[in-house]
Length: 337
Image 1 (cartoon, rainbow, N blue to C red):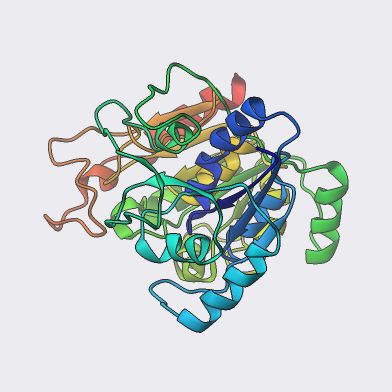
Image 2 (image 1 turned 180 degrees about the vertical axis):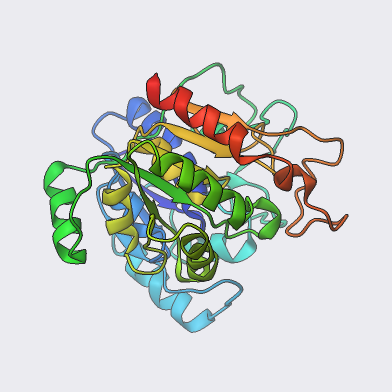
């Protein structure tokens, strides 16, 4: 195989966790040209992966069928003469364009009854492959072949020049010590540590001489603003003020990243930043930060992980009872490591 295409996930964290698959494909097929097609909000992390040659734009929003644009995109892909495509999302729509493009090998999990659209079909064994990163990596094997043991840490690039460019574009001076907070979680509030707890942690870290930068999407701006107001003068709210590319380069400067289970947590892991990751409704047994420099804090209550967007019991004890002092202790330990 000389030329292959990745249909990337629609989530930043999932795309980071797919990188071990990319590395395995390169190991299996030396000299492989591996391109990706991705939504524009995910594309920046693919541009920073050494394994990806070119990133094509997928213009479709969540749930859009858009048959005519999909046909047009399929014609563009057909002209590139890919030998194979690896379809990472499990939806029917994600497999439609590669099929219309006539790419000979269309690899993926059967998913939403995608018989025919996917012609190299894997059946997911959730017990054998508990981690999402393992499930993606499995697609490099022949269907039915075991994955075997592997260790691969995702890595995305951020050079000193990239970082200086981001600082200049945003008119930010680099402080002596930066701690990054990622207080959002796209999935829902049951994954978000309380703003008051983040603010209390900011005050404790500021006493150690740290400047706090808050990262996230425009949707996270309000909760970040609440944190900033509860810790006056200590936090810079960058939620919605940066592109994803700029956020990657600013995160690369952080001495420590404190985050919910979110896409930016996986970005920080791929940048090899020290991490303190806070888990509530989700499970580190499924989507842990893929890093040797991450500490995971979870109260492991009877009711968690519930995998719900909002707490079904109405109390969010899994995160409310994870106190700032506990997190600060983990921060000090990780920063001293």
